[in-house]
Length: 431
Ligand SMILES: Nc1ncnc2c1ncn2[C@@H]1O[C@H](COP(=O)(O)OP(=O)(O)O)[C@@H](O)[C@H]1O
Ligand SMILES: N[C@@H](CC(=O)OP(=O)(O)O)C(=O)O
Image 1 (cartoon, rainbow, N blue to C red):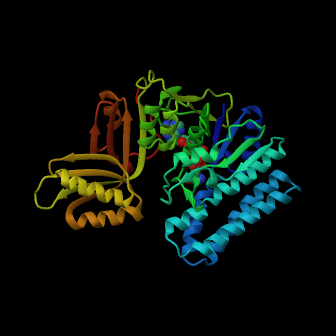
Image 2 (cartoon, helix red, strand yellow):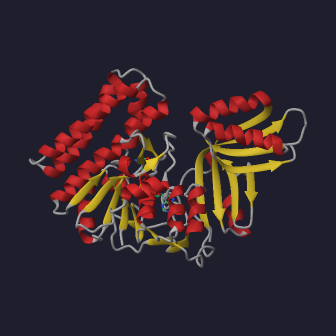
Image 3 (cartoon, rainbow, N blue to C red):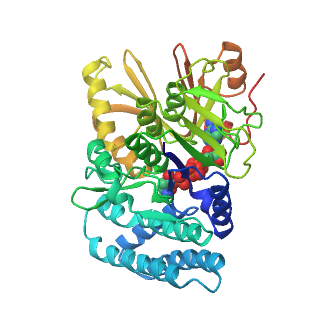
């Protein structure tokens, strides 16, 4: 049965990383194998900046950014292939030329459509280089265009998958003809042939889509950490690795903002009981984390998630009326329209509190619209802490010395909002 491997931007950030990827695949070569690859390093951010420059008129800023993208990808090619860069260089140059052409062609179109027709090039470039390098390293590959495999609707930047059409398109890819299938994460295409994207950091989801449609045996996400921890190991100096948790628990962690797995990834795998392994591409001997059906270990270790740069809105009816269902419906409807997600929602008789990611371009119009009809109190630069399976002592220790601006708690999840200034630096999980 097919294995699906997913490699994120950090695992292919430069030529040295791509070489390591080749060594890893030579060692862990599964058959059949589908490899899903993100854009190199921070290329997607660079493509977003290029898009903004293009929409401002394709001046010098646009030209410089396009040239930087071209130079960085060609530098990786030169470092990998030495004097034999010919065909790969041609393909990279052709992709950059096509990217430039698309910016001209779509600059007048709606932003999200223009975004998808251009930002998808990060993954097209990376997979072109990775696939050629695997061939060079002696592994037969088949480069596949995910825009022809993952069929979606035209909800640009957050496209919805047509599961049936996708299953038809991927049929036969699980045949073992000795070739590693290499394709792009994050991107898909409509039935009419327009490019789409699945949402930022959506390559994990791409791996899950393909695994689901291929009835794969397992998905492995190769990361710069050994596995899934009970808190971000970059922020918590004593975070513990979770060896085994259930789909349901992993969905909760991802939904509440644990950056390590895209929240949409788990559902399609859970539906077909396909296990997900998270393991290190840097330390191949490190024991991985496995996510599957077994729920026995879910409550053994409390897990902590920090979301930073949050804004808290306290919304009250102006006329001393209740914050009843009709008003909540109205406010949450405006949230949906703004495309914003509330990490915490808490209500009282005359109040609805929402803790939101501080995306200025989405938040400001929402706040302006709410202020027209409600009394709105706003606090910016906050941190939302979510703790799963906490006890009172742990919550008290985490809250000590910090002002709690809002909180919510149910049987398995506790959330608190603190001023961001009190949350900087490294955290320690109290014993
Ligand atoms: N609970 C967690 N367990 C492990 N890593 C986490 C967790 N929460 C956040 N992270 C962060 O996720 C990072 C890996 O995810 P990401 O950078 O999105 O990888 P990629 O781009 O390769 O898919 C780690 O470097 C780590 O700092
Ligand atoms: N390149 C896309 C998709 C992605 O998932 O990337 P990564 O796997 O590096 O988080 C992004 O940066 O959003």
